Amino acid sequence: MAREKGLLTNLTRFFTLSILSENPSHGYKIMDKLEKRLGKRPSPGQIYPLLKKLNKKGLISQEIEKSGDRERKVYSLTKDGREAYSRLVNRFNDVVSTILEPRLTKCAHCGCQVYEGGHQEKIDGELLSFCCVHCANSYKRGR
Image: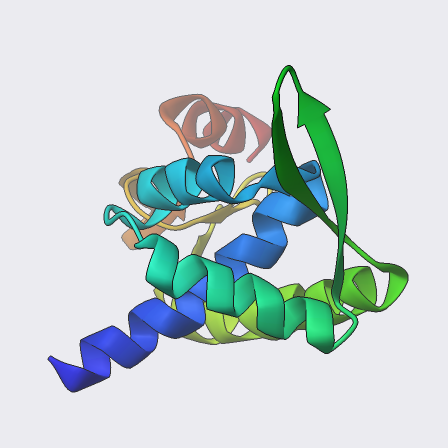
């Protein structure tokens, strides 16, 4: 359970930066989007200290926006925040690639990589993998 909480905290930080890379947002909108992405709604007690910490580190900035009688803080990524988010995305992509790469199959005809599914056919005694039946047929016609 403790590991899951730590993972959720790291994902919350990552996805908060992701959300702010798309558009400036206020805290409750960030929580709504996090709930959709993570399947669990963070509490204001989790998100606002995180936003404060990101602001203190210079990764996000905040602006006061008036909406009728109400004021709310709208957060956006700074230049440093965009650079940090870009580095995180690259690291995340490397991790995902490391996990997925051994599970990829290359189509014998077009060369595209297939994660799951695809089409397999035995041709001249050899079992070949294709992304689809159309590539298999094209491969056979081209022989």
